[in-house]
Image (tube, rainbow, N blue to C red; front, side):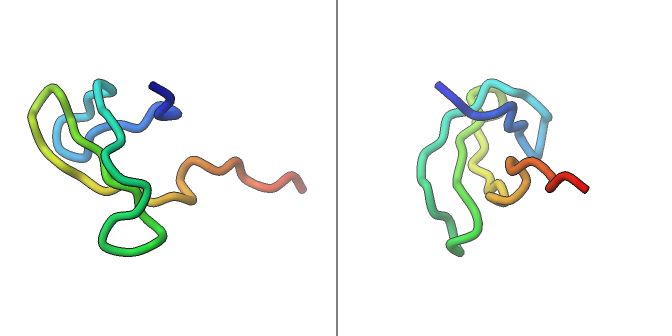
Length: 53
C-alpha cells in the first residue's frame, strides 16, 4: 500500500487505504481510514514535490 503518508482528515491516522483515484472532482482521490472508519478526499497536488528554484 503506497499512500505517500496520506493522513486521515478526521483523526490524522496514516492507516488509510485508497478507494478511488477520483473523488467528487478529478483533482482529488478518495481514501478510507481504517482507524476511524471515515471516507475522506485528498487533493492530488498535495503529494507532488514543490518545484526547485
